[in-house]
Length: 279
Image (cartoon, rainbow, N blue to C red; front, top):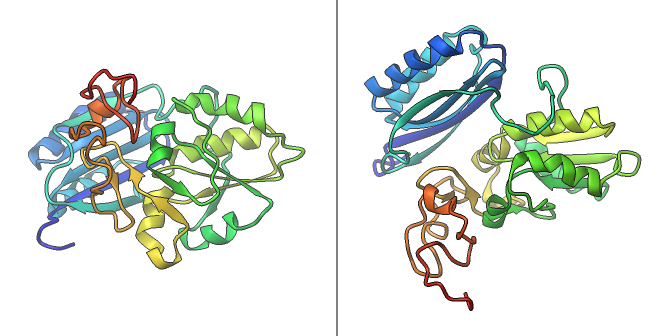
């Protein structure tokens, strides 16, 4: 980190039983506000998931507070840095689940085989491995791994239908899956195993951990990694990407809200672009 990047962004998740979500949420939000930490944390009875931003000292303190909660003692996280806040407020929400795959799966019972970032290239270079990007279409368009299959889905819960329509556990013996931070793969690989797929791998720590640990000279990642904050995307150095910040059609800054608009087409146009059918 250099002096111009004095704010730390951390992404984290853990599947573990949390019984006191309703009381834990407001207490955690208060601690974030006191330390000028912004971002979103989701709590559910199945665990925690969040991305937050603040000064490194404040982030260190909030991590200690979270890890003091039963079941979260060894909460892992990924770090990157930016010149300022990448969120505009602090939110802690209680949800029925951390992420919805549209099926009842429990990553605490069964999950795919974790692959360390430094071993990922070897796994996905195997010609017998089917490599599936579990993220939504606009995320895949920003960047992905060499040879990865884009399911072209709008929502994570559409992934099972894509798998059922295109892959057979009796034919496709090895499947590798990845996502931004790892949480989607906890549920997708769990679901895959329940469907009878024999060897299912997923990237431990997700794309962010891969970019953090694997040198660019050895990387099989192409493009930017889409992130859900005002950076829009990060490059291989986990720095805000200049390529992902502005609409190529009109030059408007692509905020998170704008990228969620129905008129937004990644790499083509946004809702501020002229209503021109040739775009």
